Amino acid sequence: MSRIFVSWELGANFGHLTRLIPIAVQLRQLGHELFFAVRDTEVAAALLEPQGFSFTQAPFWHGHACLSAQPINYAELLIAEGYCQQDGLSGMLRSWLGLFQLFQPDVVVADYSPTALLAARIAKIPAVCIDNGFGLPPNIAPLPSIRAWESITEQRLQHAEETVLRSINSVCHAFGGPALECLVDLFNTEGAVLTTFAELDHYGSRNETEYAGPIFSNAGGQAVQWQGTHRRKILAYLRPSVPGIENLLKALAELDAEVICVVPGLKRLNRAIANRLRVYVNPVQLDNIISSADLVVSYAGSGMVCCALLAGVPLLLVPQNVEQYMFSCRVDELGAGLVMGTNRNEADFLGSLQQLLDEDRFRWAAKAFASQHSGFHPDQAVSSAVRVIETVLSHQ
Image 1 (tube, helix red, strand yellow):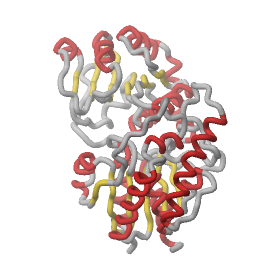
Image 2: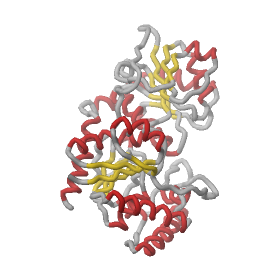
Image 3: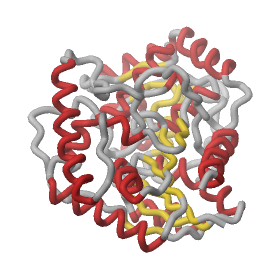
Image 4: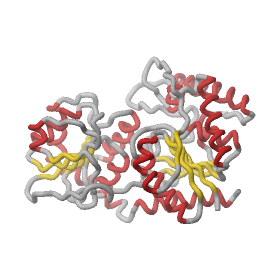
């Protein structure tokens, strides 16, 4: 059967491989051979190795770009990843092309992998984008702002795009590849799968776009149960890197509620807080607890957010980066949650938590979302992705 090269180039944590693995498993069952190039080999060792998939380190730029401010769009994100350093971009491309030469793929399946897509374009290998929205920008030139809450001029967006295009096209010319007319051409691949709901698309709902729905699993990890029946139940799924996490944990401990708090990688915890919260440092099974929760607290990982909304549970979102903040704003627009901004003292957290617990409108909005998508299961999105990939392969 066919050889499928799966790439994860940018981003962090478990979400990218959690999205890709069910697709890869189904493709392998159909007889295809797969190989992964990943951003984080430690995460890959935890998730891919038990599944028996081979992987290697994805090429990436080791330098540091000095931007005068936070990136305003995907073009400036690429500048931050070395796209305006000719040697840096050339080196990454050479590495991706070398991996392709070794594996000889029939198709490249790319999750947040712009340089892998560029290499596939140069090597004339068909590609399929798999993304939850942020890493697959809409078909607009110049690429839109990722900081809608700031006043960013069209001229600045255009300047960022032209700067990156010049660098990309210069390197493409050196490699004998076709030039890009605009940056979004990079994502106009033979296939694309948006693994989210239209209402939760980071950039807003796109016309003439089919949404496969999210891919996530809530069955893995340690089995836990709620202990009481009378108090409110709060499930918090966080990371130690969340800004303000100590104040958030203090606020959760102040509530008259039963709190299950999952913080993978947490090293230490104040004893007084630990006595008030049930804290787990490894993943837990969500199936048995999320549907009866009154509130979910999350750093806005897409899988956890979708799991909560499909269960009709409102959210307090504490994003760590611009991607998570954009995603959180979609939940806020639905009326199904609140987003914490930069003010993250204990009182701010306590006020937001209490508001979400006291005001029924948040639960009503979450339940309306769950009702609208009541027939959805992540397996449907997996099957959609597999169909797209096999369709692309069939045209070779």
